[in-house]
Length: 114
Image 1: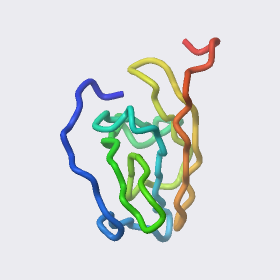
Image 2 (image 1 turned 90 degrees about the vertical axis):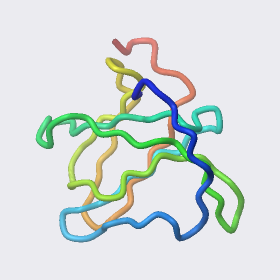
Image 3 (image 1 turned 60 degrees about the horizontal axis):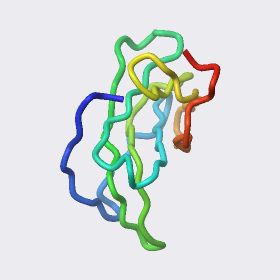
């Protein structure tokens, strides 16, 4: 995770624009409220797209309630690593062009992770 927090307010339905189509997809990482303001880093698993990118976890207010997530609106299709911290992966997710991939933040990292 990126080393600092942001003080973003909540967002409501319709405030996030996703660029989907062709070879471009999106990713939503669902977290608990305890991560609000934290930045979660992701990177291409194959190293094809260069350095890591990050997005802040924000409170999202929708018709059915409230949840917390980080949104990556326009990602090239491919396999991505979601980073727990600077050196430990939290998991991997495949992003497909024209679709929204969803990842649930783990409550703990696996014991075998480096």
